[in-house]
Each structure stands twice: as structure tokens, then as C-alpha cells.
Length: 275
Image (cartoon, rainbow, N blue to C red; front, side, top):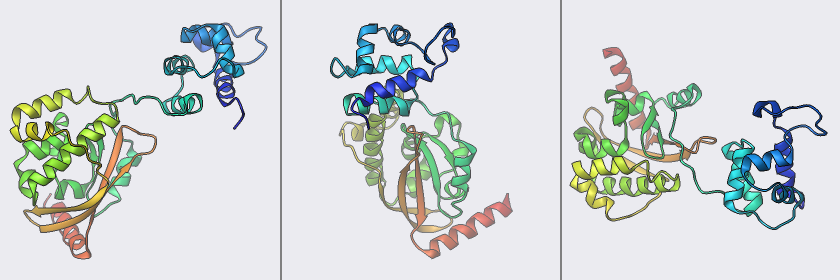
């Protein structure tokens, strides 16, 4: 990395922009891209200050200045993060983006887990994708409207989900604490206010747990369920980040032993025949 990594990066991003895309004339330019003063104008900072940044003068910029420059240069989220890392030595504050669903490729990945229930959830724990094993073993999110496909709503509002838990109180406490940590980490505190208000009104148990202010990481562990057809089943679960999609996380429940896997496979086959 160069001694002036910030200036080099800003110059590189600036010269990649097409002036015509901003309604600017592309004629009589000595170098490609936008001029320094044009970037400064778009960022609402002085041309002198922006020039100094590219030249490695004037000290470290503020987070506000970097954020304005990121918008002026039309940086992607990963480019914006890199700008903050080289400019300030730390990533920017999290900006939450609501999920727009999953790609067909991600759905095919879920479907590849034949006997392992798997789902993809947002930072606010809305379930946006799941596989056949999840629908048959955990909860069929397709049976409820999209706005109801939320893990907390299922835990606190669906009797069949509650009855399947071996220790519902322990599970509920863990879920609320992990949910709080995920939403806060993603910068989605404002986005979950309506959900928290709704559950607080409908469930005194949720309200009590929410007031405890506990936080947990989901990570990995064991999950025991009482299934109406399969009986007692145990899974090893693991949570994964979806690279390039900070708004999404994937959870996979792997059967703890071959016998559970065999029972799930037979149950799925019987359900397919019945359908």
C-alpha cells in the first residue's frame, strides 16, 4: 500500500467516473473522469480541501467528509467501507438496508441441504427463504403471509412452534437476546421498533424478556425439537454470514445423527407423495 493510500484511492475512483453521466462536458479534459473541483462540488466541500486529501496533506478527514465524498463518487458499500478503513482506520457506522429477497443461486444452495433444515433471515429476523426440510421440520413460512414470516412472531405467536420446543422459555430468552444483538449490529434499531411494539402488546413474556436487555450471539449449538410426526429430533445448528449481503444470514440445522437424517428423508418423501 502506498504512503498516501487515501489519495491514491480517491484519485482512482474519481478518474473512473464518466462526466457525461453527471451532465458535464467530457471535452478538453487532460485526464479521464471528473475533475477534483467537480468531486468537491458534489461533496459540498472546498476544492482546496479535497485537493489536499488527494495529495496527502491536511491531516485525517472527518467521517462526515468521507461520507460525503463516498456519495459524490458513487461508491458501493464495500468501496465506502474501504475508504473509511484507509482514511480513518476503522469502518463507517453501519447503514441498514432492508432485504430485497434472495437470488436463485442462494435458494438452490438452501435446496441442496436435502435433510438439513436451512433458512435465510434478515437482520430483523424476517425469513426470506427456506428449504423443504425447514418447512417440514421447523415451520412452514409459506403458510403465513410474507409480513408474518418472522422468527420472533413464530416463537411468540405460533402455538405449534412453541409446543415443538423442549424448553420454550430458554429458547425464547436466547432468541430475543440474539435478535437484539443482530438488529443493533446491523444498525436496524429504528426498523424493529414496530415489531417490538407489536410483540410487547401481544406477549407479556416477550415484553419481560425484552426489558432484560440481554444480548447473545447465535453462533452454533444444539437444537432439540418435538416433532408431531418425527418425535424427538436433535440438530447441530450453525449460523453463517452471506458474503456481499450484510443484510442476510443463513442458519443450517444438521441432523445430529444418521437416524434423524433417515427419518427426515422418509418424512419428506411421504409428504411429497401425499401432495
